[in-house]
Image (spheres, rainbow, N blue to C red):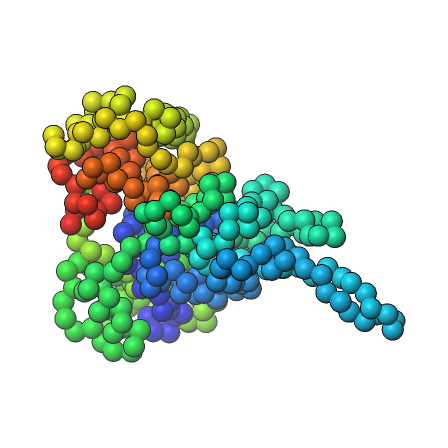
Length: 416
């Protein structure tokens, strides 16, 4: 078997990894752990393309729409329709987009959902919590099944308008997308236009694969692909086990195995975390305390910040300790539970190192607390998101950072 015989994503994975998990893997991980997902990022970074390919791979029908201020309850939940029955006109109730996705037990994709009014955003809430349902205007309750999966996308803003409604944001795991560098954009454009990329790339180019099963219980496996002229192997990045595909027929894997290109920039998260005491109950307590610290930050500002947190910033940036009012989305028990589910699946099902899984769990909470405007707002030179990461570090969830002045465009997870 050769690499080109396998199903391939057109989407190229380039976003920074969290705990060693890239954006494609995190989308699959959210799907199998029943966590609806929100994609945050500017236009043109591949959010819609990733969703479309994900639907093709999972074999799921997708109900999608680009949202706007004119999309209302009728389009989302239900609307009246006049039909002829036995020679008489009869009014029936038809399902809207969200109700139809629940009814069909499929993927619901609301692009640019932040353009909806706040009230129309709230109409989604019951579909994305334990109720997993909406009520149509005739009183009929439409419930989704196990394959119902919600994906929303929005463009973060630094202002205080056109952002996600807080209760809706609370129901999702958030992934942040960033602009491509010129080098990465060039490589992606050449690849998707059918040309070869001949110049060097300052980093690592690897093929990865997702083995996906959607019949019965949803399952996934992640692999790195090792391909030469004479051999083709799948290597489990966590357990280091190898599947040799060299003499296997492509048809055996055509339905379930999908490969994609991953660009790994030469930027890695430093690991200074203690390898001990990483049981899920210890992690749960760490995450709970981190959420409590974020809540205190929202209520009291930065005046009571611990010295350990301030020590991670340069002296000129320590003026953040004088801020009374700091806006953030206060994480709830939903995201705490989602973080534990994904941590457990990564460590127990996939064999991911516990430290990497812990980093991902921490970023699920950071990404929700700092979604959209909440993450991009700044205290002096420091963005809220960078402050949240330092708070997570002081909680033992992320590496402690050396003293430095942050680049205003950096997220705090990588040096530029």
